[in-house]
Image (cartoon, rainbow, N blue to C red; front, side):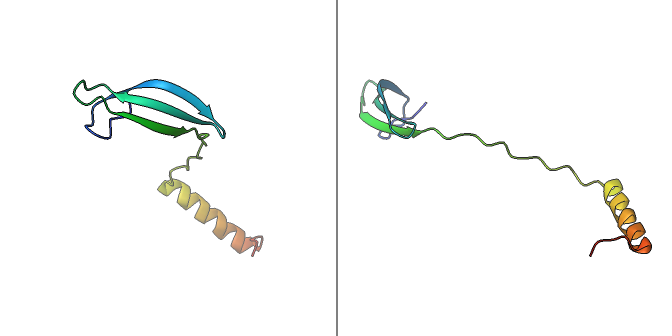
Length: 80
């Protein structure tokens, strides 16, 4: 719900128009009977992007990786 910029009360949509670029222009009116301010909002719709989650680095995983790196270094198979 979008609050009224004058009094902060809730507002209602009276008209919606689609604008280029995935935007919506909405005419609103304040629900407060003493205020009844009219105002316009422009809403931009954005695509949501999934963010990859990183695994928690536990002490066990860190030690395993360190041991693997040391083993490769001793064998001379480590990439540099």
